[in-house]
Image 1 (cartoon, helix red, strand yellow):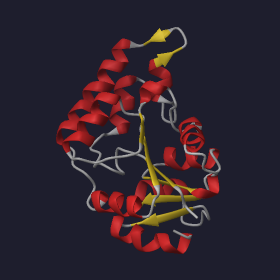
Image 2 (tube, helix red, strand yellow):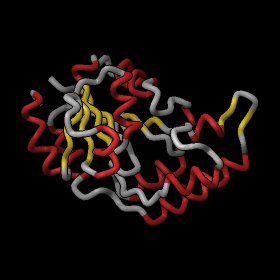
Image 3 (cartoon, helix red, strand yellow):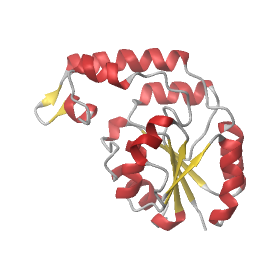
Length: 196
């Protein structure tokens, strides 16, 4: 029985217009390097890099819109008594601006200020502990390889990924724990097969 649904934000709840290759290049962070760990270093915050990242994120925030069907899907989960958690590496200001602007509600929101950054599993483990849910009672919903890695590290057995070619190239189509979906109507039809 599924009790907890953990969502990513950019590209999953809201459209993402962020060009991560361009951002990494400007921040001078190699492919595969963790942007937040490069900014929030042990010896202090790299303010220059943080400003560049926040400018890109703010621009994205001002032009993004919710992914089609997300509002109805969240209502469906609420009707099914499934707790919803939003985990994002984005900042609190952008996250709540969008949630309030588009009237989307989650039971718990975890932003980068908590320093529980994906692809580490810490935010997933925190959410499951908060709601006393086991990994097998949890589903993860995202759009990126970071979402898959964080979910796997938290031992979440059911990972739902919005279908896009970049993710499929990285993960492939044979991963038993990953199910691709076209849109939220498609995902809603799939969930009863997972004992929801």
